[in-house]
Image 1 (spheres, rainbow over the protein chains, first blue to last red):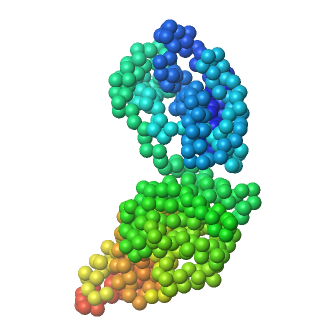
Image 2 (cartoon, chains in turn red, green; image 1 turned 180 degrees about the vertical axis):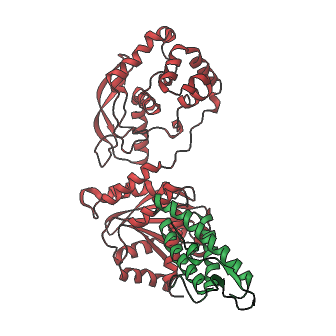
Amino acid sequence: MLIELSECDEVGLGGSHTKKGKRIGTKTANQVLSLFRNVPHYNRSGFTHFEEIQFFIDAIGKDRISDMFCNFVKSFLIDFTIQQCREVGIPLATVTSDVYQYTTNRLKKEQVTLPLNPETNEGIVLVPKHWLRYTPWLNSDEFYSAFVPEQQTEIAKPNRVLTFSRYDFNAVRAYVQKKELSQNDCKNDPLFTQIPITSARASLSAIKSLPTGIKDTSDKKYEREASRLLASLLYPQLDFANTQGRTEDGVLIRDLIFYNNRQHPFLTDLWDTYHSRQLVFELKNVKEIERDHIYQLNRYLTNEFGLFGVLLTRNRLKSAMMKNITQLWSGQRRCIIAITDEDLDLMVTVYESKQRHPIDVLSMKYSQFIANCPS
Amino acid sequence: MKDASDVEIFEKLELQVHSTRHEIAELSKKKPNDALNTFKLGHLNSLLLKCNSLLGADVALDGFTSFGEDQVPTNSDAVFVLAHYTDALHRFRLANTTYFDNKFHWLVSKSKEKLPAPNPAYRKYKD
């Protein structure tokens, strides 16, 4: 049952690119069970905080802890999901899910109603926002740095530290007690963190390998990858606000909206010149940008979005389309710039090297556009 | 060049261009597509502007004066530009030295004394 509990795909917490995770093996599960033999305290009283497992077993980290926890409380989370979905009108469907039974201490397959992931047709379970933390309150990094004697850490082999924990249970106990006393400091972390550099490169590769158009839902995949990539690349100068859907000519168009906090001279310039309190990025997974695409974005440039917009697309604009956006600037002082795969590549390179901010690439594109406009 | 102070300015500038090219070339070998940070870009631009005013009509790169502040040049872009400026500075050195009496001298208009110059071949940039 431990193996079954070690992954909770419906919730999808963790740092992996997809929400699919691998369950632990029999060996690790046996190691967890052996704790009851090796540590007399657990044998007598069981776990008070099962996060403590990570101090003893190498293969159990924070991801496993959150997955196991979600499995134990899945019944509550399913009720919470149904309630939230009904409140905001998200459609629900019947799916089969393993739910932990408190009375029998067993997992039981149940027919439950959950919202579905449109790409995988698998159920999604929501978690209350105020439960979320980036790392568990009891975490191994803090324990090793503060509670393991230096001569143990000098040997620096995680296995030695884990062995130390097993035979010096008092250190674990002292750490847990200290954390229990300071439990008032346990607050949830900000939800947004930038994606790691390796994930940024992986995300860019995923975008580049996607075909243009709507075949095999590549437009949806493009939107998903581009939004998570841009939200990370442009943070903290631009705060990601939302993806916003709107329907034009019967087609759902998804845009990325960022708050303009004027944290960069370029953004201050946009605020002053184009009155952009929010920046809108329109995503177009098309081979060529056409006149209609530009007009769609142009119609959107009102109120809080000001007169500045970004078209995120795959290839460079043709000269006729460049002429089109130049005319928009000349006639109505509306500015639309196009960011292509090439520019995203440069942004990711800059993000990796940390020599410049990726937003400088956006600023450069704007300068190039203005340089080509008639004075 | 007019006098000894011009020679001094040129010598200093040439050394700066050589060392900058060397440093950025090292970066470029590892990561040619990495962007120059704003600190390096600022210094590079000020160096290029000084070179432009010294070289005058003998432009190093047609249509180019310096990188814009909004631009995001890569290491390889910078090496490319600096290679042209190193060549232009060497041409400038050759044009302003003369070989006379078994020695190299600077050609200066305001000074009647002969200013000794090193052999230009020894001052050519080497990778």
